[in-house]
Amino acid sequence: MEEHTGKKNYEVDWNEYLPGVAIDCVIFGYHEKVLKTLILEYKETDFFALPGGFVLKDENLDEAASRVLFERTRLQEISLNQFYTFGSLSRFNPEPMRIVMQKNGLEPTKSHFLLQRFMSTGYYALVDFKEAEPIADFLSDSCQWYDIHDLPSLLWDHEQIIQKALESLRENIDHRAVGLNLLDDEFTMRELRNLYETILGKELNRSGFHRKMVNSGRLNRIGKKNTGKAHRSPYLYRFNT
Amino acid sequence: MEEHTGKKNYEVDWNEYLPGVAIDCVIFGYHEKVLKTLILEYKETDFFALPGGFVLKDENLDEAASRVLFERTRLQEISLNQFYTFGSLSRFNPEPMRIVMQKNGLEPTKSHFLLQRFMSTGYYALVDFKEAEPIADFLSDSCQWYDIHDLPSLLWDHEQIIQKALESLRENIDHRAVGLNLLDDEFTMRELRNLYETILGKELNRSGFHRKMVNSGRLNRIGKKNTGKAHRSPYLYRFNT
Image 1 (cartoon, rainbow over the protein chains, first blue to last red):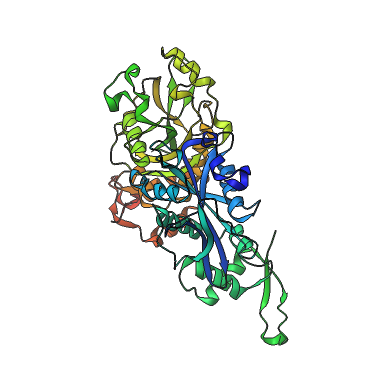
Image 2 (tube, chains in turn purple, blue):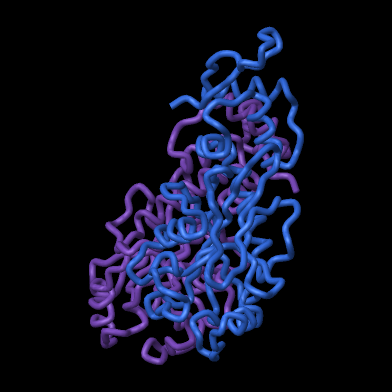
């Protein structure tokens, strides 16, 4: 929040935010067969959680998600996909946040904004690994990439939120944005298949995948990759516009 | 609400509900090539809207949706599908609700619970047309089935909510619950195709549809329908378990 408002934490005016409504962002980055997501570590604790935030009273829910993404990555104009709103009573456990507040010199008064029951709307984004600059928020020591198969234990229902985001990403894997955001502009069929296999968490038949992709009409073949050995060089592809 | 609490409207204690969080239910019913949805008409107005409600402080979000469905239809143990949370600023227009409150003898004080900005989480349900008994809520004159192609003009973003529910239903049309809830236990291939065509809003190739359904492995063929003319009678099917 301090990035957005330019204020230090003790100057945050919680009255500017809607009560009870939160955002959690699952920010996926892909690189060489590894799918990662950004995770915050709260200051001086062993508490890990998804980057998240709240909704300003004069802000759309979608805008709040974009703002949170910007605050944590400095990335803008990234498509965000709303995938689910988490609203079970069991996610309401203010104890860890009380500890986080104490570590940060905030008094955990009973009715403090941060200690309410929140509904949290989950958004996922796909970003280029190399372009994101993860930035910790004012309650956190770090904001770092973690392999989705090697996550630290997360607070609240955040592991469930990541699983749900991953299910949604899998359902939408053929959408244009998945490839566009997670691959270079030009890629080989093997690189595309690696991406699919990593997201889906399973191996795919090489020739079946090739055929499906060529038949989908989504790709343009643009020549061979320059490897010095023309006869063994793979073709390069682009997503067509 | 009065069904749930056993209270008259003037006894509703709005403090029991979470602020700023609402539910809207798109309750789909199907009958003979017509897809319908339940719509409320507010008392003594020409205002139409989706059945909806709020979330009790001691209730899960999903439970609130089930309660709203029960209150409006008396149906229980119906699967509800959360499809989207609507949170734009543009949906915040308290003027129609002020008029509704006045028609119902409620004073539209500036900070009244009903006049807040709400995030609304949309759920859709598929119900058997014949088993639902639509019941108006305490602010409404009627709760009735409307053909989704012949809806009255709806308040706020409720037309958009129905469109989004319909998109989600279309994406999930192959899920078991769609057929189970919207067809009789035994049905002909034509009846199944009619359902698909009505939901998808387009005609489907008869033999292609037949092949796809048989190949899906989801159906059991259980004999011919008794029409008195065995050679012309269509086969009956069931969804397998």
